[in-house]
Amino acid sequence: MNFVLTEMTFLRYFMPLIIEGTTRGITSRLLIHPNGKYNNPHKYNDFLTKLSEKHNFLLEPLSDIDLYRDTTFLVEGCGSEFTKKNKTISLTYQTDFSLSYDKYINRVDKVVFPSKFFAKYYKTLSDKNLYLGSPKYDVVLDSNKIYNKYNIGNSRCALVVFPRRRDMKKVNLEKIYNRLEEAGYTILVKTRGKDPAPEELQGHYYFEDDSWYPHTTMELMKISDIIINFGSTAIKESVLLTRPVINFNIKPFELPLDFLYNEEYCVNLSPEADMNSFSESIESLTTKDLSAAYKKAMKKYLFVPGSVSKRILDEVL
Image (tube, rainbow, N blue to C red; front, top):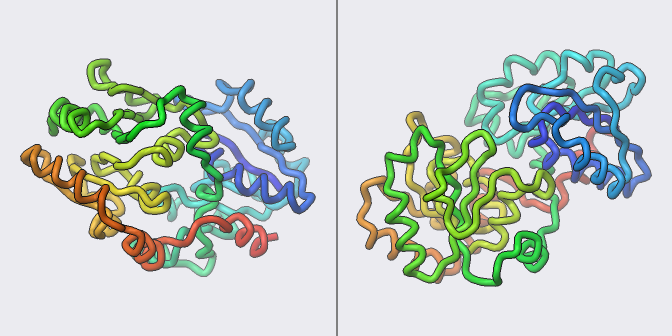
């Protein structure tokens, strides 16, 4: 199997498939191509080499694609201009497909969606679609290993999925942090390398893209009791990792994955909300049993994580 890696962020989708392939005796190749962004694979050669040695896959340049006429996996069609002679399977990435699907659908053989609901909702139905889930969530996350990896004490944690710098002044982050501290939470702040948080808003522990696989955001969610979100598509990870969310919608456009915010595991607050409401929401979300709400959302909108990679390889190989 081939996997076209034009961005390091794609690793979280590819690695579970590579690992599943290895259990079946299938050789995998990561075909690398540079980009001009913060997640350029060529910046992380040492990391990729160590990962390939650990999981027994090959590293090759994408320019050699014609040497390997195998089933080839892409993310959002990236690299499809190079793979015309191969059977190509494109994986969707959060809500990016809602903007890019029409640009690559005619250049790939199949597209793997989290669910048919996603395709209907974003008007991207096609006979090429496969509704099998997302392999990104076929990862085993061990809380103790995560605490040790990042040298975080085994305490109650709140993960702040930091907003874009463009939007951060629309909400009083200092007050949010103060209330979290008053409630006894260790504050974990996660942002992207291209959008760093100011030093004074980096919480007790600050992360950018510390780990491409397993991905930092998912690791931090695993050890957190509550997620503080600002309209990010991280709501999807929150549901699939069964973590309650308090959301402040400060996006300057329509809320992505808005349907996932309307369930019992999430409290939506105005950016101008009274902090007493914030504190009450923390207490409510962290003391009630939300298991039924997560199951409902997975069944209605998403999928049950855990064996997606097996389903994908069964279907496409």
